[in-house]
Length: 92
Image 1 (cartoon, rainbow, N blue to C red):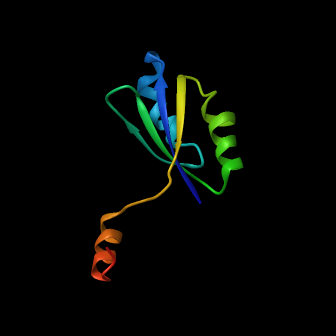
Image 2: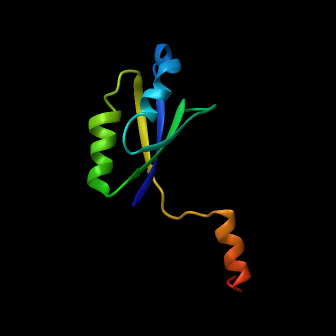
């Protein structure tokens, strides 16, 4: 399973409608509105790089209201319960 984060700049007139449309796409796990340089961050989960390319390039990048995207692949995940479990086992 590949996890990626898609940073999305939206066209101003689509800011209110884009989030739900993004969230409805298969492969999109979560969508957040954000402050700062991007308008939305979408968490993607797909089987492989081909599926990621199809999702980003064929479905999302051409969606009405998206001005620009930047894709970031997740390399390693850290969750609080995994970190505490490692320390409980004596792994430092």
